[in-house]
Length: 353
Image (cartoon, rainbow, N blue to C red; front, side, top):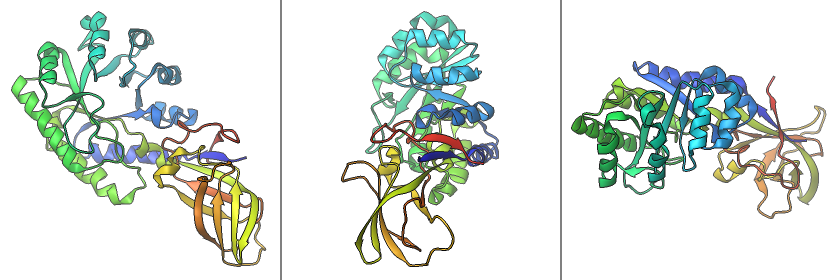
């Protein structure tokens, strides 16, 4: 059966490299891993040893609660008084509560005496620009935000922002940090943190590495945020290249000379990040004594869907046989969390030896 292979060493290396990049700029930097990205137990255990968690639901809280985190970031539209109380009762010393709608402020009313103490209030903001998410939070230039700042400015601990998945543009960071700096100065806000959210590309997306490790940390260090704690809710960056999916060829059909359609024992609903086309393929022929014949294969999943074509026109050094291994690489982000049992079960997770 197909199996997700978790590379703990790779994930730890990703985390350490990001810490080093920001700490080299003398920034107080903290990672709050985005649990929604990949909630495999092996991942959550590793996070408990390295940093902490960002959650968006009671379901995710139940997943991380056994690890007894000392601090946690709570985001999303489904916060509740019961969830807040359970987090506080668990022994969490600091709950970072990022409000992004009117109901969030209503939920906080019974906890006013804890704001600035055990509960650190942040407000999620965005600026109006094409491609920047505006579903959550408040327009940073709006009267609505000014109203909340006038009501909560004295107990406000931070600002939170998140541009959008795969929207990693340094100019966006420069703009939002400048606007936050203006608010801090104009309203004399005494903040503790800036939560820069997620949105970082995968650690293996090499074209972005100068931005991730050099330019973004330098930009933050030169902004008003330099004297604040900096949070990053990375998910994709941490796990994208820390998971592969090992599969086997289960059926073969010859369609032309030296061309075959083959099916493996998984399908695209087992790794929904398929649609982003950021994975790669490693074909590993079974056995060593087979004749070398360059062959083209079209790799399909095992489902009944016409669209379940994992990799067309893939060149391999031998003719395929049932049992050959096909490794689908770099599928750690949003695969397990969005995968579904379809035709066959969601693959189990095994740690790389």
